[in-house]
Image (cartoon, rainbow, N blue to C red; front, side, top):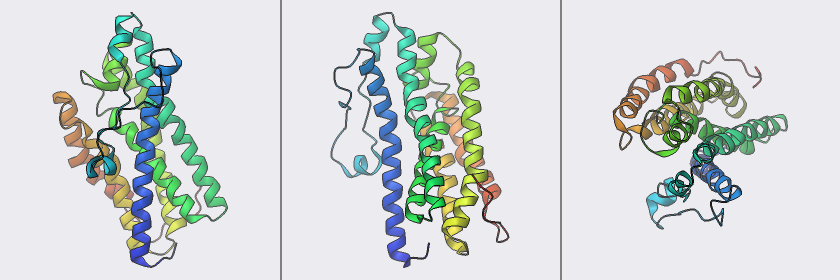
Length: 252
């Protein structure tokens, strides 16, 4: 993908922002639509969108599903609470993880590099959400994973085991297969861009999403975030570092 450098990185940043926004919104809408389908919300599009601020536009940090879990608990429907809480990860990021992988393969087969780059970044955001919830925010007292645990009366270890395995496989596949393939396809002999794509990808998973448990989620989540950002990020970066002898076309 040979482009003038300033224009390329502007496009990259725009696609990165769009991929993050979509990864965030499909998660929140999955909660909202699930609550609506079960009769616990009147308008599935009625998220809490937050203020029109630079931080919220950039990160959607104030956007929330706007689901009244307390009323579902009050109705004695703990299992429905668990389903609505799990929908963000399963129906939102899980389904669109598959969509993004398909879209990348579709674009790659037709040499549509910009579309392939967007699909790669969208896949990155979905994978990042997997890590940000399991294990980072699994051992806490509120938010999605805690609602699953309370709704089903199960230990966080069960959530970690059941959701952790497919999440780990998806993260491994992204780092070990999709990332090397994308580097070779998008930046065949441009080592600097390969290094930047690698660093951004690994940082996004283990430092950006990995730090989501640092504040407000308890001691266990805090330390998982610390380990993710300070230990796993550099180790994964070493593991994923591009080698000039890497061969294109291994398949994804």
